[in-house]
Amino acid sequence: MAATAAIRDPAAHARSLGLDPARLPRHLAVIMDGNGRWARKRGWERFLGHRRGADTVRAITTECVQLGIQRLTLYAFSSENWSRPPREIAVLMELLAQFLRSELPVMQENNVRLQAIGRLDRLPAEVRAVLDANLAATAGNTGMVLCLALSYGGRDELVDACRRLAARAARGELLPEAIDTDAVQAELYAGDDVDLVIRTAGEQRISNFLPWQAAYAEFVTSQPLWPDFTLDDLRACLIEYQGRERRFGLV
Image (tube, rainbow, N blue to C red; front, side):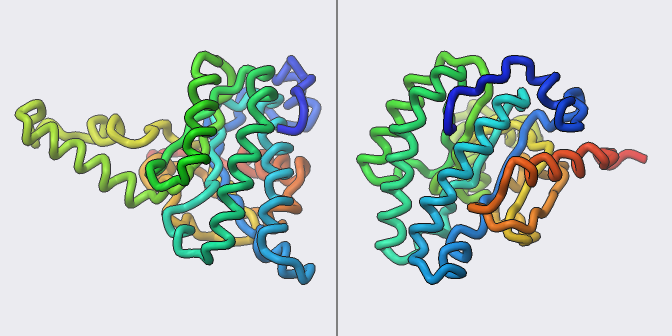
């Protein structure tokens, strides 16, 4: 978040952008794609794309606060990303720690509660320490939830949920026939249903991101690479979302 969100009337702000405040997504999830390609197009090293992408995170997060969106989940680092070159991983982890340190005062000022999902035990100790400190510091905030998917994989999440359910059944706390969709959802890292998934860089894959929570989400592809994704691009995605009819399997 680049600065304190000055707008205190989210509905008025939404209407000023041509958006219906009553039809904004409650939970917006974003696959931030294209940092590496953005850098390569300029003949630069990939980490410079990630650094520029962090600026976009600040701008988009601030705008979501100003619009009154309740929950924003960002696909920051996937479980598959651990297979990238060690130097790139180290840079990504350093940028993450820097982001967490620099943004905490702004999150506090804007009443944002930070959350993180994924196999967080794989994060480097320094990053985990900063993350845990920010989670604790913002735990009492009541505004937008900013959820970072870190070391996250949707299949990992479902496997971990199944393991927890199996352990409860083995202890005699849960009958197998009592396991239903509510029981599974309660064991996810975070079970909040997603209304809208945005993916940048023109890609149209879900890439193992929130497969359960996004089962009925609308999916919008935006052409700009993530470092070039602007507030106008976000507005265009939201307008497209508001133009769709959500039926949830009904006629």
